[in-house]
Image (cartoon, rainbow, N blue to C red; front, side):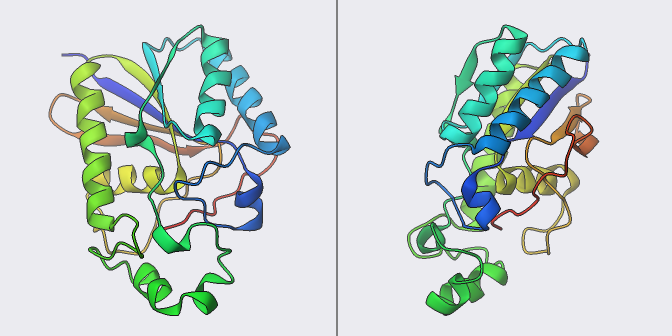
Length: 214
């Protein structure tokens, strides 16, 4: 059986990324730097001559814009799904990382302690987020077994994918870096997933932000 390959891509930079403001499900567009990153990403993927069978994207604008730029270059249609969204970080959404501990100290402490069942005040718990990302990974495998696909998502989402593939504990400190428009390849050999290549930003001419929200 042929291996299944998924290249997960984090969306391009947004103004809120640069400000270190938590986005979650708030629909923030790419900034000028992010648009440039998406174009360089599309050029790089075109030049590799790698054949992709499909491209999926979160339905949030920052991911969908990135996906559309890539899809146009590769002559693919984008399949959107809310399952690829960032984690909903509840009452932390819209706050700067510097102000959240002051304005919402109890929720912030639960956040940084990675309490698995805390929904951050109406958001999504880590456990629920893990289940959502596990389900979308299984769905992509069922629908594209033996194929090679792209999936444009978000920093927190790709950290969760990394945890699932490497079996990293959900309450452990983050070890995966996920820069904007990075290429993050995983492979399924018919029995299990493995990391093929992670945090590849060789297509960018400048450093990309790695600030993510979980």
